[in-house]
Length: 79
Image (tube, rainbow, N blue to C red):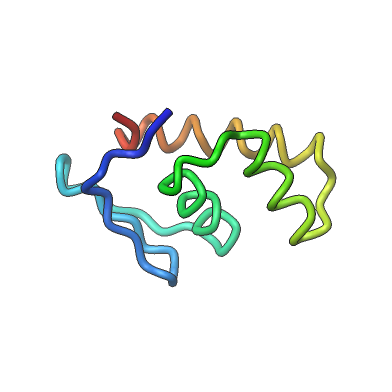
């Protein structure tokens, strides 16, 4: 899955989709996940990066990432 090229993000967690006019905010981990998605990192690399950096349970984060990706799909963030 690739993020749309025109998705605007800020370091503070603001995300704007100019295609739909929708915007939302996310926490620091969500901001980092979006940044990794923009860099076209595969999911396994995103999971490893976040789990190592934040010392979170891998199984739990996989579930959280699935939920977050579902929310991003609903927001039409992916191509």
